[in-house]
Length: 107
Image 1 (cartoon, helix red, strand yellow):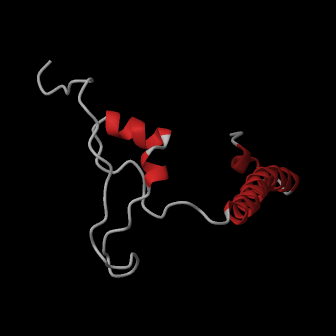
Image 2: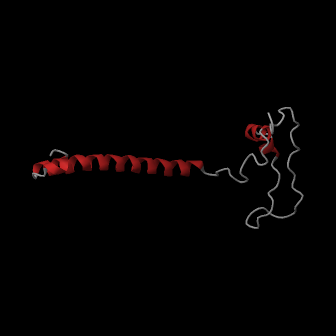
Image 3: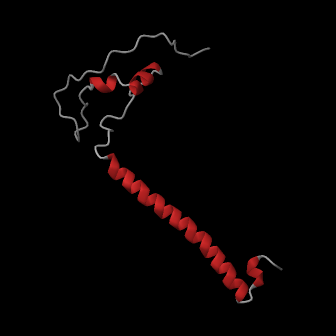
């Protein structure tokens, strides 16, 4: 197959940081992380030929806060779906009670 990469290619050497810049807002390179380089995710990414297997600094220091927010939004979503469905029933009942059969689909 044209363009296919060989699967037995050697893995590239671990990234190294030769810059003395501090990582952060300046956009400079981040220091090397040997643990992240040896992680299964990084190994699989290198096997696929990807240059950056992970987002630098992408580890959430407080994942529980994000989970709480997700649960709150899930409850809000479920509440809105139930409200829309119940509103349909209520409006249908009111339309029938007030004598608007055209709104209910009956000619």
